[in-house]
Length: 224
Image (cartoon, rainbow, N blue to C red; front, side, top):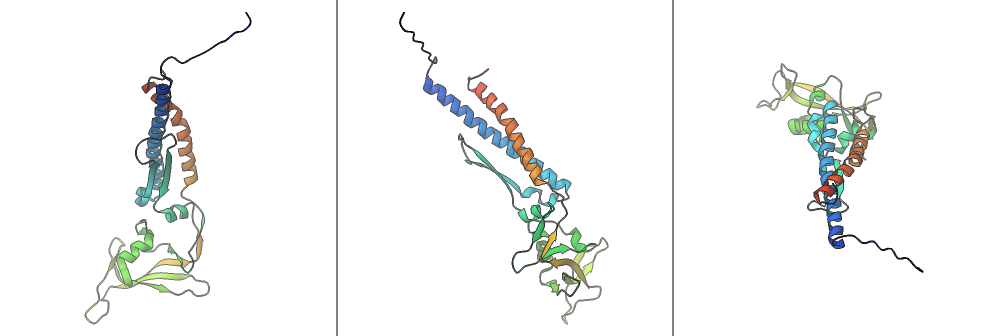
């Protein structure tokens, strides 16, 4: 014998086999992204609730690309519609944008109980009190202040806007209340650790994808 030839061949249709593999991989990617998105958003919202920020827990969003159908390289994008609030609660130094000031609730003032909406507590104050809000200029040793005029106080400590009399003055029982310190920058207390939550989400993907791929290979009859 002067030569030896060994050949190997897959049984069945190679093209169909390749198509089934691609389908299993693509579907596993999509299924994993959906599961990671849902559990990841749940994790992030839970962190907001624990930090006392449940009013903005619905600000977290998760988008999968492509939006429809399946692909071999799907992508998941998780983001918040209230990034300033998220950032300000991670112990970072927050600086105001050029020409603006940051509004920090004065300790013990009614502003501490204002809802933390996507626009922040000041946005809530503007919507509720409008032009009753006014700024008190800073002076040496004291920051500027955002206050509200022409309000009353309920028995539960909530502010209510009062109407002016026919003479253009506020009636009896109205007052001026100091609400916010206005400062160029502030170091916020760390109440959130979004980086840790994102790391948890990444590890969940690494754990879930192989399991999801295995299930899809079985579904396509490529494993048992």
